[in-house]
Length: 220
Image: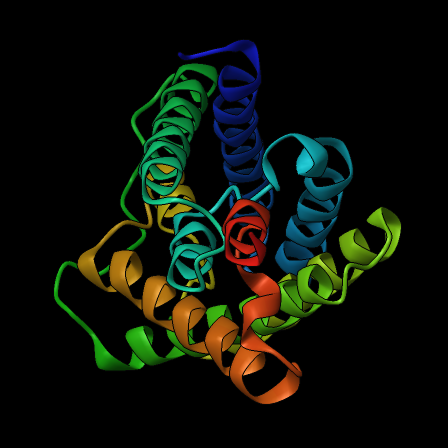
């Protein structure tokens, strides 16, 4: 049954992603200095963790959702629903930005696949995922989790900005029209590698990130 709790989770991912895309574009449209973009995005991520974390986990990024799925933190059906909600959030942000500006958005991404951009986005997202997963695995209090996640995002953006638009999020890339196969695939690879490296090397038991239901069944 599709109850209120599940609906709230999907709406949280939709709204969180849309708000992040709006925050990104508002800053990117006014300055090319990556520090300002990083700070704005970090604040948006931190607020999302504080306000939506208890509802959906505040992934608001397909790369984060897929990395959590590879660690068996969330079920396959939930991962698919989250990614769909996030992409719709990006599309909604795109439509709202175009409406408010009264013009079509110009693509900020190169059409061809670029290994430099791919590497920058992957490494930046890996840095972000490494910190975000550390906060989840260590079960930090909400405020600390928000701070660590936001600062990790800021650091990831600064690293990626050396060679890319530093979006680190396929859904946001759609929302601000920085979309290409490079920007779509690189964050996925980076997040999966960064999160799993942390779990494999810096936790006592990789099983600590398995779903609570799966752990409970195993004990029975």
